[in-house]
Amino acid sequence: MSRYFKKIEENMNVDFLAKLDQAREYANIPFIINSAYRSPGHPESIKNPTSSHIKGLAVDIKAKDSRTRFLILDALIQVGFTRIGIADTFIHVDSDIDKPQNVIWTY
Image (tube, rainbow, N blue to C red; front, side, top):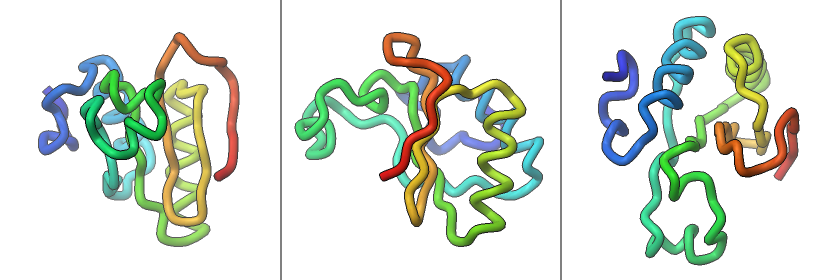
């Protein structure tokens, strides 16, 4: 059971959530989740049928400013996440081992 992310637990990978909890604890700031699990029929899943969100292995975390973005990114890296996407308003993180590792991309 997740300490910080009870609202998104359904259909999410428990190991992914445990690591996300560790990152949240490390950052010591709230992680506001914009998107977590997406069903295969979700419009974003239809656009991207290989999305890690469909597997319950990804979330998008709201990043409202540069300081918040830094704290989230630092925490994700510290706890061992190796797949991170950075956008102006959110950070995507996933633990999908079927995709390239040790990558950070921008949107």
